[in-house]
Image (cartoon, rainbow, N blue to C red; front, top):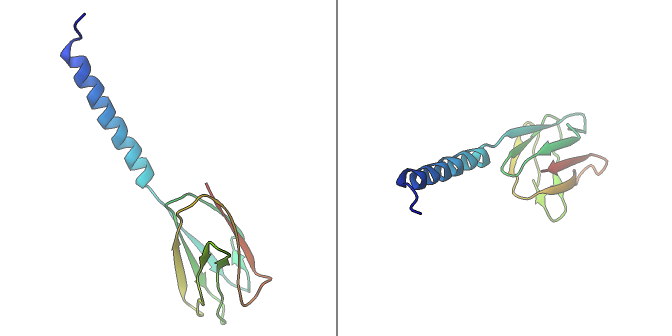
Length: 110
């Protein structure tokens, strides 16, 4: 039995449109901010998605770091400065300030 041409064209159009919607959804990302103030990370726990960006902003008068072993290291973030990191991998990442080890935070990447 011969299939009508319009069904093939319809299937192709739905594939193209569906792929476009998925591509647009994946391309959408969010920027999150973690404040460093009073020798604390705020929020202490942050849920993000791969492709998102996190900005740590140091509002204290002393330098800090945002360091997760084998994952990311801001190096020194001077007072009134910030550091930006783009999320590329899923997981739970505990991080600390290398200068002040009691400062702790967590990124949960879904």
